[in-house]
Image (cartoon, rainbow, N blue to C red; front, side):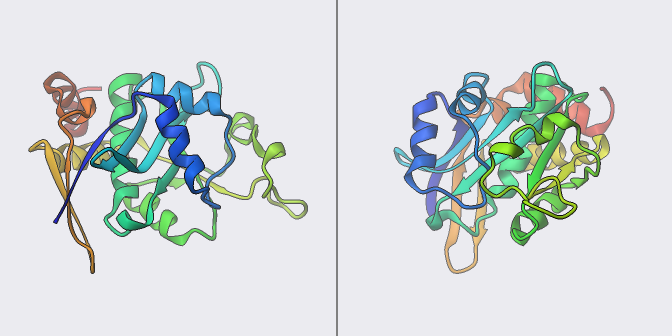
Length: 221
């Protein structure tokens, strides 16, 4: 059994250093200011063992005061792949958006069509194709080294959005998974990973969990 932790990042540099250490070809290019903003508002989540960060994922704005955000930049180091951390990151980020930005803010993501594992995780949480994303969602495409040079595609990725009812299910799943303050994940051939989430506000704060529980049940919001 392996022991680790889940929390929101507190220092932008620890997040940036993690991404710089091993670039992932599936991650879209993004300016450092986006990472800094996600960390500053407590919406860039990290998983680690001991002092070492092993995985990270954030919530990013498409622009100022727009009613949708992007769940992006999920990177998991090789030793922790297979435990379902990408799905966990989707759940915690949806919960954080609902809790701190409100259910009226749409959670979206962009997935490379060739990344079938990511697509399976996104669909399992309840994301549906976002067939007409607004221009703000495509704003970074001109700087993307993988942008399509011809054909009908406007972006190298496909866009997905999470309807409210599916968001309720995602939040409910997150609350159930973190009910004891420690969540347990397993991977074939790698055993068990226990994550202490006592320092993760959206997972353990009683008022936040109560509000999220009301959202998940449909009794409010």
